[in-house]
Image 1 (cartoon, rainbow over the protein chains, first blue to last red):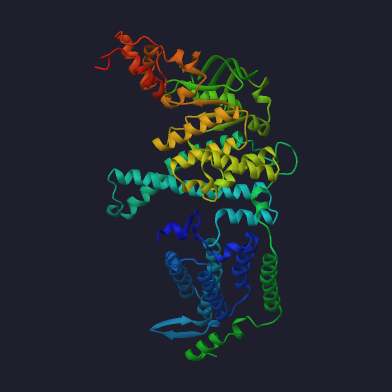
Image 2: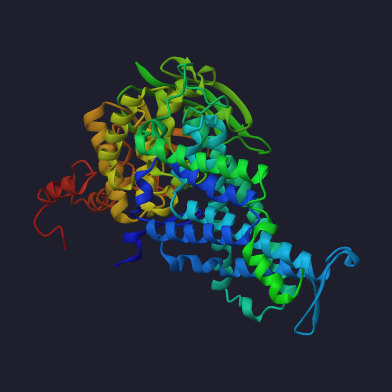
Length: 294
Length: 285
C-alpha cells in the first residue's frame, strides 16, 4: 500500500489517514494533549511517569500512528538524556551535602543523578504526549480546537499563518540548497567552518524571500477583504465555518471531563500528599538499596 | 454600465524613476471578458493591481487619475466590500494562500465579507465543483500540484461570486493539462455566471476565443483596445512588440501575405479548420 494511503504529511509531522482519534472533536484532542503533557509536571515518581509513557505508546498504537515514524525522535531522546546527565555529573552542586557513589571508576553524586533521572522520565512523558497530539492532529484540528476554546480569530489566524510561514521558509531553504547542490556543491566535502559560513550565507536570500513573501501575503489578505480587526464587512460577528462544522458530541464531553477530572485529582493529590514524591518511589528505593545508600 | 473605468491614471512605484502606467484611459462594460496582453514589464499586472485597489492601498507609490469600480473610486471602498465586487487571482497561487487547508482557504474570503454559515457551505461546494477541487478540501494547499494550486486559488476567489474577476497570468506556472482546466473554468464563468472577467495572459492562444475585447499594454500605456479579431489582424504590430498572437492566426496571416487567403484571421483551431476549407486547391503546399 502506498504511504499516502495511510499517512498524511502535515507541517508538524505525519498523521494517519484514518485514526480512532478523528472520532473526537479537536477540543477533546486538545484535552488529551493537556492532560498527557501537563500531568507529569505533578508527578515525581518515575515509575508512574514511565506508566504514562507506556500508556501514551498504547495510544499511539490505538491511534494507528506508525511506530516507525517515531524513530526520528531517537536522537532527541539521546541528546536530552546526555545533556541532563552530563550536567548532573559535571555540576552536581554542594558536594559536602551530597552522597557520593563510585560507579565504573567514576565518582557520581546520587541526589543530582536521581533528580536528572526523575526529570528526564518526566520530560519524556510530557514530550511523548505532545508527539502523540501532533501525530494525530492536522493543522486544521489544532486551529479548530483553539477556536472552540474561544481563542480570538486573529490570534488563531496568526498562529496558522506562522505555521504556514515556517513551512514556506523550510521549502525556500530546501530550494536554495537543491539549487546549490545542482551546481555541484558537496556538503560532505566541506569542513565545519565552511559549513557554518555557508549556512550564514543562506540567511541573505532567505531573508529577501521572506520579505517578498510577507509582501505577497499582505496583498493577498487585502485582496480577500481581510481587515486587522478580523471583523467581517457586514460589521457583525465573524462566522467561523470550520469551527461550527465540528460538533461536540456526548462522548467528547464525557472524555474531556474524564481527562480533566483525572488531571485535577492528580494535581490535588500531588499538592496535598506525598504519594507522587520521590520518597514514595519503590523504584528509587530499590536503586538506593542496590547502591547501598540510605 | 461600466464595471471598470480608468481615466488619466499614471502610477509610479516608490523609488522608481519612470512611471509603470502612463495616462491610462480604459472603460470595461459589465459582463465583458477582457484579455490584457503585452510584452514583459509592459505594466499589465500594475494595471490590474490598480483596478483591484492593491494600488495604492497595499503598494506604495504615486498615483494620479481615477480608478472607478461601478462608479465608485476604488480607494474609498473598504476591503471587505471591494472583495465582494472584485476577485483577484495572483500569478503565483502560492503567494495568496494564507490558510492551512484548501477548505479553509476557500472559506477565508467568505468569512471576511460576512456570509452566514449556510451560504458559506453552499459557496464552498459550488466553487469546489466548478474548479474540480472537491477531493482536495482537507489537504494543505502546499501539498498539492501546481495546477491544483491554481484551481484552489481560483476557487477561493470565485466562491465570493465577485462581480468582477481578475486573473493575473493564471496559467503561468502550470502544466498544459492544468492550463486547459483553467481555460475551461474561465469559459464556464463567462458563459454561465455573467461575471466581468479580466485576464492578463501571455498564453493568448487559449484565451483569445473567449475574449470580447483585448487590451494591448506597452511601456505603461494602453495602446489599443479592440475586439480580438481586430487586434490580431495586425500581426506585424504585435510581433514587433514581442506579443505572439494565436498560431492559427499567424499561419493564416502568412497565407494572406502570399495572397492565398483573403478572409478574417481565425482565432481558434475550430475557426482555422473552417478557414482551411476555403483555401484554394494546393495552397497548403
